Image 1 (cartoon, helix red, strand yellow):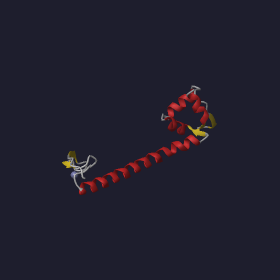
Image 2 (spheres, protein in one colour; image 1 turned 90 degrees about the vertical axis):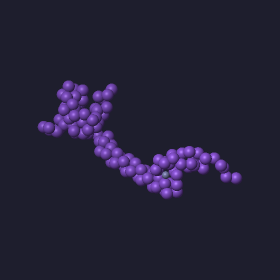
Image 3 (cartoon, protein in one colour; image 1 turned 60 degrees about the horizontal axis):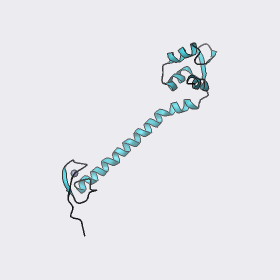
Image 4 (spheres, rainbow, N blue to C red; image 1 turned 135 degrees about the vertical axis):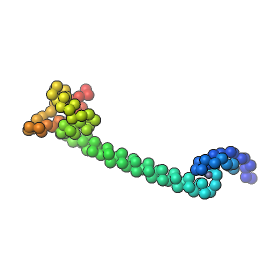
Length: 117
Ligand SMILES: [Zn+2]
């Protein structure tokens, strides 16, 4: 026996009010159901692309995390601060760095962690 319930619902695709025969119906018609499905597929694709973009953006940071010695610029990018701030911490002795040559400063990764101890 089919149920005789009638539920007033709002179509999730066209926002029209309709009478649903089941409580799980989301759309007013087959047409809307198809379009709603397509829309959701598209949204999922977009979401996937965004996740992918975020991953690619995070990649350089992930690479830096794996490096043993970093340039001042890399330290700044890793800490999300300015190059100037990094030099400030080097000058004040908060951050140990080696001057390999004039203008060539390298910071050991573990020294960065010490900043937070
Ligand atoms: Zn509809």
